Image 1 (cartoon, one colour):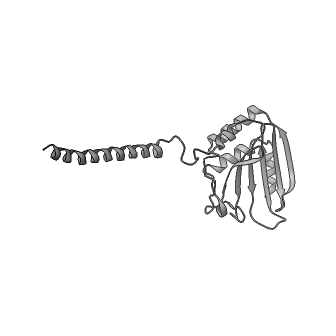
Image 2 (cartoon, helix red, strand yellow):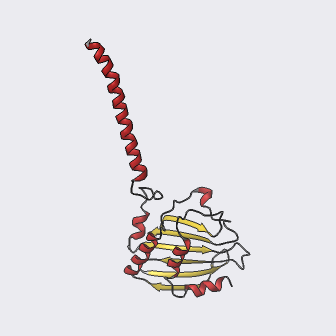
Image 3 (cartoon, one colour):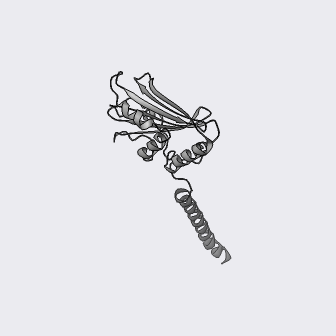
Amino acid sequence: MTNYKTARIIPIAVVLIITAIAIAGLVALTRIVFFSGNNGNVSPNDTSKEVLLSASSDRMVSLTVRGRIVANETFRSYQIQITPNQRTFTTFKGYLDQPIDNVSLTNNVPAYEQLVYALYRANLIKGTELTGDNNDLRGVCANGMVYEFKVLKAGKLMKQLWTSSCPNARGSLNAKVGQLNNLFIDQIPSARSLIGKLWQ
């Protein structure tokens, strides 16, 4: 009789143990998926947030905007680079980046902190970088504008995200490009008038 009871109890116990393990696994998976604390676009190993928000002298954020792909003589682009110590804005003509106008201004740590926190809150680093051919900007959005954002530390690229004005080339940026573009442009008082001259 004892052997019969034991024989019935063991399978029930095994089923209960397996059920408990399955429930625990499901709960753990649910926590990872829904309550992990990251936004789903920045991996836990991504240090770009810390790099972006630091005001160390070796940090830089930059924006490069490329115009329509046209003849070398009429191709235009511009770049804005901001560090805790300096702000530079350059407009270019041709595919060899011949400078047209250049503005170089000093900067300070509080001003830089305000900018990078504003960029962070505007989701500058929210996107996931593309790789290989998907991250090759040559020929992308031939009839529109391409916007490339970079976060650098000691000259080393830590995050690069891009998008364009073409619906079929959304790129890796997961943010409102107009808002980010304006944040950069507003760092250079004369930038809007100089950009306006580029595509007249």
